[in-house]
Amino acid sequence: MTDALVLKDVRKSYGQREAVHGVSFSVKEGEVFGLIGHNGAGKTTMLRMISTILKVTSGTITVYGHDVMREPDAVREIISYLPEDAGAYKDLTGRKYLEFIADFFTSGDKKNELVQKGIELADLGDRIDSKVDTYSKGMMRRLLIARAIMSSPKLAILDEVTSGLDVINAFEIREVIRGIAEQGMTVIMSSHNMFEVDMICDRVAMVDQGNVVEIGTPAELKEKYGKKTLEEVFVTVVKGA
Ligand code: ATP
Image (cartoon, rainbow, N blue to C red):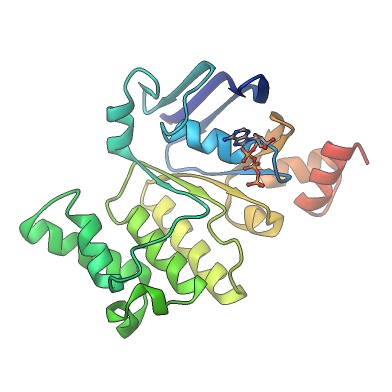
């Protein structure tokens, strides 16, 4: 299996303070890989470095063999990053927003196909023609995730994608994520929701104070620590409980 993403001894400092302390892991093509950890553990910092938005202080990150620092343009062509606090242009309808995004990728018939794919992924029914500022939080997230994956990036980087969503919306977004992984797209996502990570991630990395303290499949980790849930594993790993 090809490595979609490789981090080697990655560090990130903000001024004098180091937020990520020499992290190494890799993600295989087609995997859904979860980063879990407390607030401030360093998950967003890692995702932003992978996305080429933040500079890596030391170490290397490669996405399908392209180094994020030396070949950021090549990396940007094959990734899509959905930040936790992403928004869409509120004066546009959902459809117009997807058309606006599709313009960055293609034109003509191909653009129409892309927009149609985005509309299907968002699955907002006739509300796709309502203005975005009338959308609920869940509708907005669906539109944004459709935007992030409609162009079939090789690696989708999703920060807290279901945060604050109701059960149904979160469930449907998880289904979309599993669906795209089954089509071969690689996903790295952060989440505070251990249940969600347990359900949809092939492997997880537990992040604590800027370090990856455990890594494995949810089943492996539960077995290793003799726990029934990932949440219990996390507490044991982080607190030594
Ligand atoms: P959350 O779950 O709350 O989103 P996180 O795991 O994503 O947290 P990060 O946002 O990566 O954590 O933050 C890691 C550390 O880096 C924290 O101590 C945070 O205060 C610090 N940090 C993040 N961004 C900056 C910045 N722009 N300048 C200085 N420090 C920062």
